[in-house]
Image: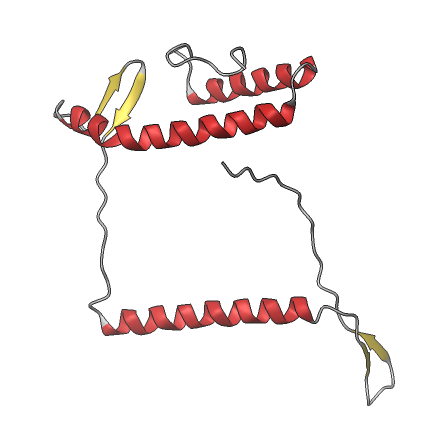
Length: 155
């Protein structure tokens, strides 16, 4: 695993995001082509790293923001990366009665859509329908579906 996962600080700092993604793809392909690794085991271990790094980043974010804001600049270069300090306004529209009414309608429509999807899945059969005027046999529909396979790792 030590050859797959770069140690903290060993990814070359001059690489941009696209180049880092390419490096990861090359490393992954080398591991796949090597044939010496249990790829499921590698995948599970990488999911552990992913969970660890996401939480680590979240925990450090506030302190890093504090340090960045002390520069007094909204955008600057640091450690061969571009740092941007952003602001975001979160509006609370719930004081407006018309907005509340529209929001409730949207929620109702979303629920109706889910209910309709459930109904269509449960009744997904070819139905033979005969047109009473012409006597023609019309076929109903069968919902098209795609089956996608994925993998979920619970740690």
